[in-house]
Every structure is written in structure tokens, then in C-alpha cells.
Image (cartoon, rainbow, N blue to C red):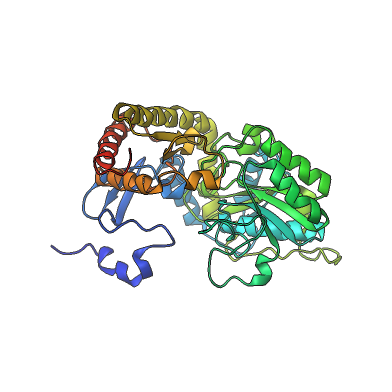
Length: 430
């Protein structure tokens, strides 16, 4: 049988993957196309997609409004390295929705958005330290890759890099604290408060919901010490509410990083927040030692902005966050019902829009309580779902789109029942 042309050349891409997401060989596939909440592979399989490009495809693949917007803009030009007439309209839509967004600056991806947020914070405050939380993912840059997945735990606030090639001088400017522990965070900050530029936090860390008053407590700490509060809303933006987690939890940061959804499936992200901070990026501003370099060849790319604008319009018109709650809650209840019937200790943690199937009992509130659960069972559960044509990222969150429906929930729950039974029978759970 002749190989599909794309499949024949995947070995030219080291690891046969684009980053760290690599499926085991037994369930790996090459995507041919996507439509709505389904994917088709080059070998003819159809999968229900609960990965959604790792989140961007909140309204599904190939939405007619987004396709039309891309086609229309492509005919007018894709990028100009000059202000275009689309990006300002997207910025206005973001400002209408996101509480902290007095101003918006576009960048290429979510990691750039968190990187520039931290650069802005250091420049604005004149300080050098940043506090992040253990287990939090803020992208691929050197400042973000600390305490993401420590093999032997972290002695707070020691920051150990998660990748080779990160200079020790960078690590010395990062503090790591336990998520959802305001008391410990406060204790870590007090001795260095005059050096703290920012606290950066995923309001929902991976799928860990914040405890009551945790985010408000961080807001209070920043206000008291003069540090900036940065929300990484690359995942939560427009998904928990139209205004993101800051609307859902009623806590307003100084800056927020936005990504995934705002590009409609094309590379685009943004830093949004206080105008006085973002104006440090204006070229030619009076030199006072605080001017911030923030640029990129494709920043505000017209075709990506057009796709993002169409996506946000559809989300607003269809009350997308409510739809995610509706479908995501049904899926979570279905998975937990399967576990109950099989006497398997599974709980769906996190918001319905991106709940995470976790095998274990007790409260899961931070990175260490999360990693103490049965991660081997979670990974094998994901692999078993993939064998049954349910596309998930094994041992990770399950993204819901507005294109998913109750019939697909039923199919997924049937597959989940079989998958849980398989891992139980293999002795992976008790």
C-alpha cells in the first residue's frame, strides 16, 4: 500500500512531532483534515477531537465564518509589517471583553505573550524577581521553564530549570511557590518584596481550580508590594467566560497573556492590560531607562487577526462559554458514572471546559497532590481512548468545543467505560 505523501516524510521532523506532544507509536497518526469536532487521519480513521489543537479550536475546525474571513483577507494580503485595518478591530473586541484590557499589543504565540509580560513588569517596576507556581506552564522561554515538572520536588523558592541551555543567571531571578498556598507565597515574598517585579499565575493552573480567595490574595500581595499581577490566560481566556478567568473569578490583573482562541487556529497572541505599562513599548518614547523592545515580523498579522476576530464574534453570538459548560459537564458526569459502575477511583478535576480525568482519591489542589495521583493509569486511559477513536492528550486535560454534541458525549462515555475496564483488568487501578 502506497504511503500518504505527508506520512512518507514525517521522519524529516525530529521525533516525528512538533514539540513535546508525541503520541505512543501504537496510537500515533497523521492528520488529514478536521471538520467541526472531528479529525480524519491519513489512513482513513475518524476521531472525535478533544485536543482541539491544544485549545485554539474552541468553535471547532473549519468553521464557515472563520474560513470565509481567512479567504477574504488572504485575497487582500496576509502581512505588511505596517498597521493593518484588521488588528485594531480585534484589539477593540478584546478590550470590550477582557476587564483588564485598557490596551493590547499583539505577538506570535502564548509563550511570547508571557515573556513580554514579564519583560514589561521588570521594566515598569525596575525590579528583577518574578514569582511563579510549581507545575505552572507559561510557555517555552527561559523564564517560564522553571519548576514545571521537578523530578525530585522543589525546595521553595529554589528555581530549577526544566530544560538544558537555560543560564543560571536567569534561574536566579525566578522564585517558585506552591499553587493555592497563599500563606507560603506570602512568606516567600516578604524577604524580597522590594525586588519583586511580578507574580505570574495561571488562574486555573493546568486543571487545578483556585481555592477561594487565592487569586484575590495574590492581587492584594501585588498591590501591597508594588509588584505587577500577571494572569496567564492563554488557556482560560474567552473559555471560562467571555472575559476569561478574571471575569469568572472577579480578580483583575495588571497584565494578561492571551493566546490560542484569539488566532482562530492561526499563530497569534497578545498582551493586554494597563495602558501605562504597555505604553513602555511605544517606539521613540522619551528615554528614561524603561523603554521596552517588543516587536516581531508577523505581530498583528492580518490573516490571523481576521480569523481571530471571526472566532470571537462567533463565541460571543453563541455564548460559547455556556455551551462549553453544558457539554463539558455532561462528559465529566458520564466519565465519573463509568468509574462508579466499575469501582474505579476516577475524578474529573477542573472546569467543564477543560476537565482532566485523574485516578485517585482526595483533594487535588496543587502540583504535588496532582502528581501523587496514578499518572500511569491516566496515561494508559488516554491511550485506550485513542484506540477507540477518541482523540485526547493522554494524562492531560480534555478540551471541549462548541461543535461537540451530546451524541459524541455518549460515544466518548462508551469508549471511556471500555477504557477504564481495560486498565482495571490490567491491574493499573484498584
